Image (cartoon, rainbow, N blue to C red; front, side):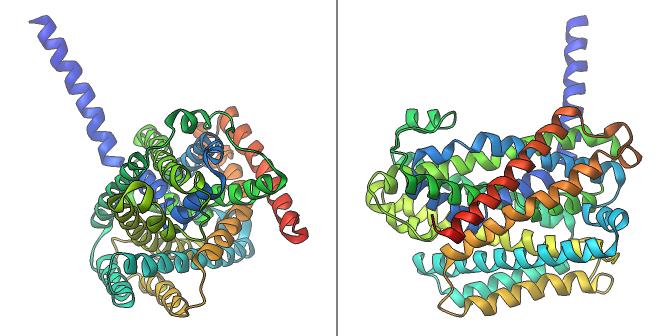
Length: 425
């Protein structure tokens, strides 16, 4: 009876912990998975097609950095009961808030245009009417966001996350060299490293960094966690989710790169967009694999539209001290909801012009994100290292040093990338 009693007690303890974890689950996973938006899929597809398996090498470092920085943002909000944007305004003044919001708005608008461009092109691959589909998606997302609440929005985003499983199927259908793929996670090899290849590796590598770890992601995880109202006593469960979310996002990124590296790179087929990959891999992996890849892009675009638009609306509300919550009705948070739909309408108007190039826009947007990361990290590290805000929950030495070291590397890589683009080396 003693053994049975102890077993029941242990089960009760672990089950209670599982329930607590599920109660805080959502913000970190959604934020991390939304990094694999349509622009992200385009960037990963191009990376795999142009560079092959060696571009997998940065993924482990990027995953660790993503986990650490998003954990900082999550912890900052849970402990301080304020969002990142709110704290920047309070600690560094209105000028800093205006400048940061302007940069975030421009970068996010570019991201939204990329998402809608991907939806427009991919819908045609699936024989769906592009413009009517975009208008329907925007209308439904606006109705869902304004008439729904936080819990419903979170549930919809978590369901969208399941569609990323399509990339695993596409990768397996491509019949890659799994040994070469996995080993390139630890050191890049298997190709001839010419000056041109190294130049492309740097440029596209910055795009991979910029699409995985984004300025909007740092703000969104903070705001979305604040809107969920996670209790301070559950911070350790939220920390666990951030590392799970970081692993999950690059787990799927791995398969996106493998799918195109195994089919397109080995056959010397260049890409200029993610949706091209859906067509290009069909001769090598089959029509079903290509169709699933396209469905994945369409889902990623939808998820990106909702999350990035919410990020800008959240940030504006926090930066300027306004009301903004998914649990508020339209009359209480008018500016929040109006800004949400205004971004989508502006992006829709832009993509109606046929000259918009998804590839160029995706790479430019992701590079801007990479350039903007050091400034966001500066505020994030400073705030989470401030004992007056965080108390005993300040950054530990590893978190602080690793984030600072990566920030410095990003600054140097950004300047070198910019110099390369200017000189066209």
